[in-house]
Length: 193
Image 1 (tube, helix red, strand yellow):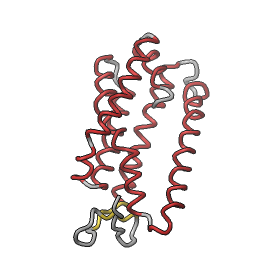
Image 2: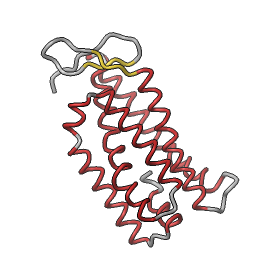
Image 3: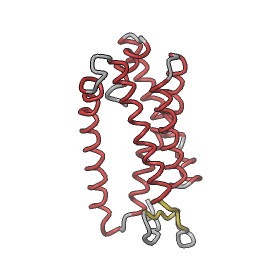
Image 4: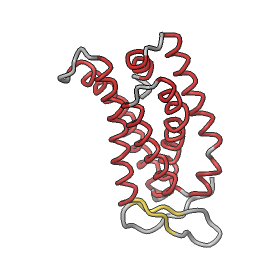
């Protein structure tokens, strides 16, 4: 969303460059603020529930953002549910990777995790261009940008299914934090941070 947000706001809602930039900054501030405020929620809800909440919020709010025509509603969606979903996303995924990876393989697993995140960031720019320039609605910028924002919601919907099927919280040994299991393996109790 970050690589297309200002353009999306301008093309879809008539925001000036200054308005779009200000909303982009407000969205960034909302992401940071929500990230700091949601730490206790993540601890209380656990990784699996937090991932489900994040992916569900992201799915619904991005699909809504891609389809609304009301500027005030778009701003609300951007600053509240889109920000909350984003603030939960990467931090909780990082926690899940840490808790699910065996300690001896954690460095390698984190390397794969960050390589996947970088590959996704690299692909995002190309996909944006495909959606804005290369698809049948080429030349109709708002339609391509809306479709690109909706794609983010669709990808988050896939995440919901993956979390439901493959991520399971397991009770860790007494006195330790939450364990996380990806797939059908044994629970891995978190190491003290």
